[in-house]
Image (cartoon, rainbow, N blue to C red):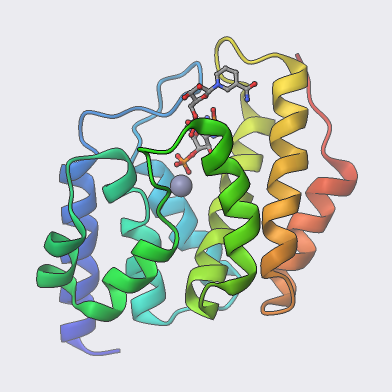
Length: 179
Ligand code: NDP
Ligand code: ZN
């Protein structure tokens, strides 16, 4: 790696940390939101994916969806490649909830390889998060529906990384919850 890569990585983390600074996860502990994008990037590294654009996209993947960040801002700071991957994994929040969830299933098979692995690492993190601590107000049924929906999404991104595929499959097979 080069010192330029290290600078780029830290700039990306700093940008995401500032954007998500007032947000918390939905867990009972109120975990700082930034733990999630960092954990998604770690899931990729653990699966042997260290490509800088992919890691940056993972760190930034929820900034446009969940903060005031714009795609233009991402493009001017981090370039067109990173912006494109972030765009591919960003839901249109103007659409109704059910439609957004349906479109993830329909779109995922057609997104780029970089976007697919970010999507897999994101779902892996969220499913493990649900296993670790069920959000306030979530019923067992809602958790199960989230697992079923996630599988429909990640099935559309299979066959790129064996480790991510295996970890997700293990969760779908053996995912049990304590309430
Ligand atoms: P979900 O309600 O499906 O919540 C799951 C998402 O929350 C994850 O994909 C993840 O997204 C994020 N998240 C934050 N904290 C956690 C955590 N601790 N564990 C797992 N995931 C976490 O999706 P939305 O947030 O998009 O939708 C909110 C909507 O829920 C409302 O608009 C409402 O209409 C709807 N709703 C749905 C119900 C249902 O039964 N499905 C019932 C009631 C309301 P990320 O990666 O982006 O952080
Ligand atoms: Zn996410």
